[in-house]
Image (cartoon, rainbow, N blue to C red; front, top):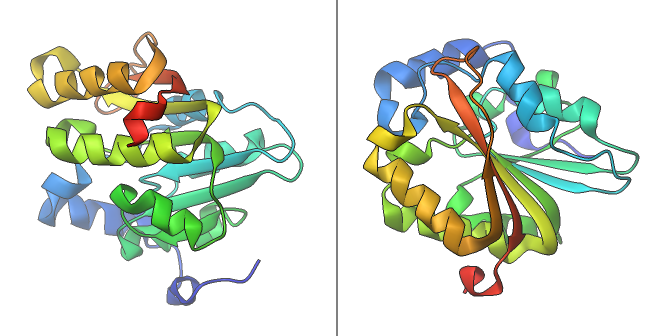
Length: 210
């Protein structure tokens, strides 16, 4: 796999870049710390080791979840790591060298994958800060996700606690219910900052991608 120019910027500064963004751009980062290893492994553990599986990771950041995805990949599987911030994405060069790094916005997921001649994927994993996004942006991103998932595909994401106190988190849950045939929530993972649950969605509805 050829490496993009972004890989030439070096590595080892991912954590520092993350915390700089926390200070200067909290609204877009949406987290106060990278995903802790236990939650990252729990999220990545949902990926079946099926040969040839195509996995998209939204909001790859510095690779906290990416590193847990690698051991789950079966023979011939592909991992597409999407991150809009190049200073965060550069850390994946060393943390997840198997991943195909994509600089860009999740709201344009279809276009990013089309540029790689990929029209559908099997799994979409996300660590995006949904509680910071307004309903319109949540719908746009989920429409993109549903448009690229195969009919039996899975979408799984982190939902930081307490979700019930955040109107945007409640809106996101409503959008998921309208976008997928099945939506389930796990028990909390307390070893994370903040604690979080996973939302696991199966069977994208065709009308959700329109």
